[in-house]
Length: 182
Image 1 (tube, one colour):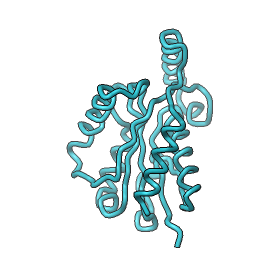
Image 2: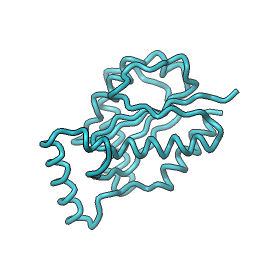
Image 3: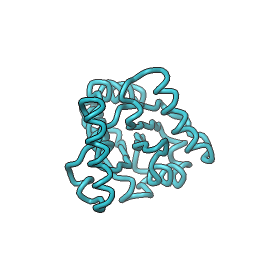
Image 4: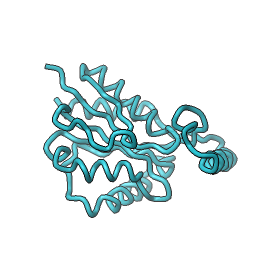
């Protein structure tokens, strides 16, 4: 019987959505049935229908999204009883160093401190991007779009690029999760 996995994400402008989609495609290559779900749209899942959960959030200004935190809090019992992994997409991971991993992990753990611990298969930490295209970006209000465009320009000027996602690392992490779920 094929396992049914939820890959849930909470994104700001679409970067985490794109990472969730890539994770979902990689898990499908292992024979799993995948639903990629925006946690903002669906804060309570069809819980008992999924065999595992891969839940991701962006982190901005050291804070995970509210939709991610609400989903984890509201579905704690289900997440604790099924194989679960978290992933984070964050500009702080522009370089995968022990210091950046530690700081990013601390931000996630601090945000989750009031929620009982969920036994996790793993937590993936991935570099982010500042993107200004796509459906997620277009749904934002004018002011937020302006801020994101300004951020993108500033990051591009300082670092010569605005996308720090390592797609091979993301696919490799999904492969590891696929093996842990089996």
